[in-house]
Length: 209
Image (cartoon, rainbow, N blue to C red; front, side, top):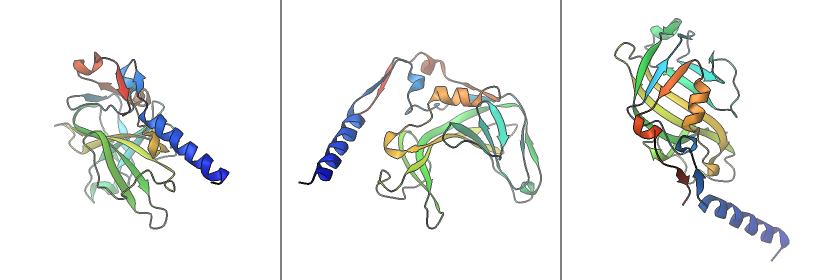
């Protein structure tokens, strides 16, 4: 057997071992596989402005960026509005409010290089959003993908906000989603995530097979 084949086999074995070794988290909110559960509340502390022809406002490092430039390799969160064609033509403002999380989940999202079609592969804790696209999301040629945690939210005062997602670009096999504590830090002074009391006092957790 060639040396290159031996090295490849050893590397694959090492990666498999890393994936199967449980990772211990003293604080369960640091676990990248945990999500803000239904019943959580995201309290928006400041008004967000949505420019014409844009239905999203990004928040990163505790600052609202609108739809401007941001670092895809640092956690960011996006507030999505459900807009009619007419309302999309003008600037809109989302006022400070409390939004209840009614559904949450995690999944992979990436853009196919040739067709630029957005595809999602859903798995992990919670309820995934999106449909399976590739049979194997961990294929070597995929490269960094969007590790996305999605929260469906509602407010009687402002029903146009229907989704908040928090993401980071990373290799799929690492399964490094944005942890709950990272979500809290990313939102900063823009919004506060209020968790159910049961999750705040949960025992240490592990990730792995």
